[in-house]
Length: 257
Image (cartoon, rainbow, N blue to C red; front, side, top):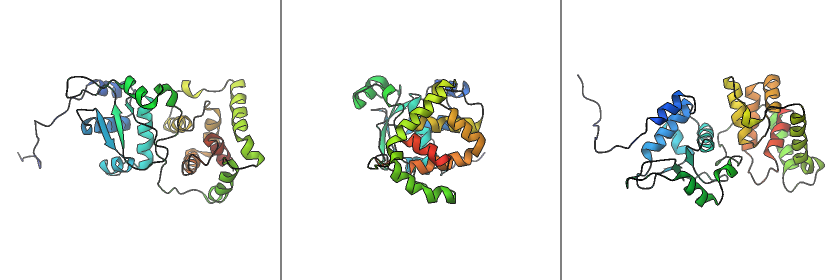
């Protein structure tokens, strides 16, 4: 029997709870989320329960099987599910620290996740569930010609400095859309259970855009398909967060171009 091409160091190990496997089997974690979480777990500092990462670095660690964009989404999903916590990056592309919930510290204790996140954010994690992604995706998307040609004009109309009637009313339009959805017995994002891969992706996008109702995006899925939705989402995320007044309203307008 041939020897392994590397030496296993039995003095270099971490405690990895079997409950993570249970979460995967029971559907609380997708396989991709599970993979990223385990990677964070084994690379974390055992004294602090923190992993120092960047989206680009994680993409390289996984041999670029997952793009920076996709790593971003997985990290946000893990944060929403309270497996990890990290500060809002607001477009920064550098590395950052990630706290890992219930990580076994070298001093015999565990990461007090709720206390630590409240201390850093000054508020409960529940108040950050609808915040913007930590890092805007940087990959170049193959956006359709019409979408690309109208995008810049829409950005100006939705910007904070715009005085156009569309810019001023974008928030109201979105609120009216959600109100109409609710009056028609809409489908709240928090209660929605995806039944397919396409619905899962739409649900993730709706959460990241801070939407409250799934009716519009599911209707768009049937009308335009997932590719169009993902193109519009990437176009929204390419814009600086401080420039666009309402990402949700901008996303909706892009889809209907």
